[in-house]
Length: 90
Image (cartoon, rainbow, N blue to C red; front, side):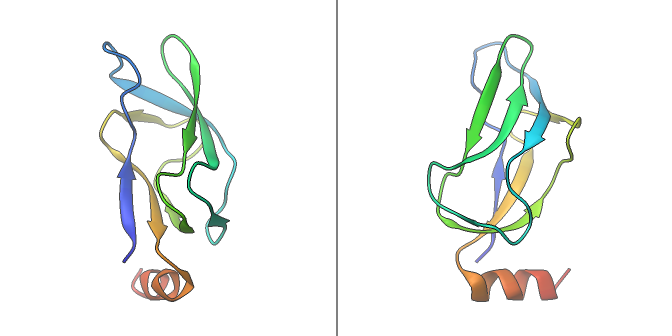
């Protein structure tokens, strides 16, 4: 099943982050812990890591987009079959 993952909160006062750069594209296979994107916060730039292995099914924010903490930022499918099913339903 493809699962959406939210932008984590990296600091007590963090309310949002800006996608500085995606390091992956839709269809890429990722491993747990792989750096997916660089996120600019009000204080630092943080690397967003893959929470699980799988296939990138959707990037839910573009580079330069401001994303609120807790808002979905990426969808990761469990495997190729799950990815194909997800993409077929778009």
